[in-house]
Length: 378
Image: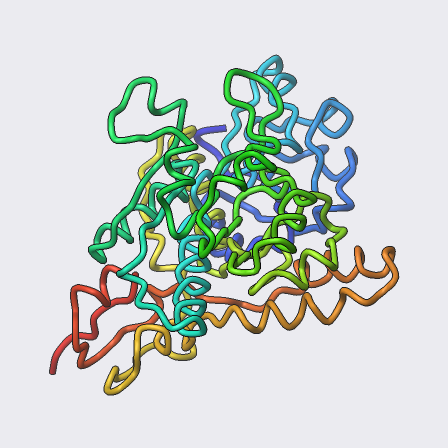
């Protein structure tokens, strides 16, 4: 396999997959939801997204030796089967982490504008400091903001973390970025419920762009009815694609689980599989991620009198997703579920902050801390 041209089968909706993988051989594109064993009879490499179940039923009669999923999650992959058959596997952890961070920052700066406070005057609490939470922490610290972090597994061997109850009592803004786990020493399902919500400050902002069931949505709605000073921002929902319409009505900003849906992140996921295949084949990575990024429609802007929020909105405006989701919430449940999925499936090509070069920056350090690039002078 290492010294010949390969047959590569890829989900047709993986951006730039042909351009990135053509150096290895023939790239065949097919709908990921409809793949069957007959599609794999002469395939060496299989590249999928989360809609394809990769297991013995799909692979048993195939010559596939490498499977890659351009996603963080691996629930759709039977890794035990792959290992038993000596099939190499890779996913793309962190491919959309920057997109989630920028969703969070956009929502928080927009909320600050609405509520009339300066973001630098708030204390930020991050629960779950992995790929997303860690990057959010670094950007907030680069902006000079006060940040508290909670991550019990990491706290076992690292310093700087505080208990959850301490974070909830101190933070003005609470951002949840944990995985969803139901077992083990640190389960996260309903990590935030009645007791925990009772600890937060009356003016707190609670933002969940991690996993819906990490917050008990019933408890969140109950406390939201009693404490009107609380602000909720939800991208994920406990029973999605069903959205609790009453809870959505109580939220300041809502969206259909798209925080990580940047075009850059999708290409990054594809590129990370390219890197993994290069490693598997013991070949050098001759291309760069940037080589496959198309230029943004708005590549450069003069800051002038534009605020940070206005620069953010040039790239991503959360109000668009908020409007689109709210528009579906009066539909009958079956139609609302379908609409939720369609909003995700047909999501627009949203770019990341790094696609925008800012010229004449008033505060270049802040511009770079947010994630924008500084335009070259001259």
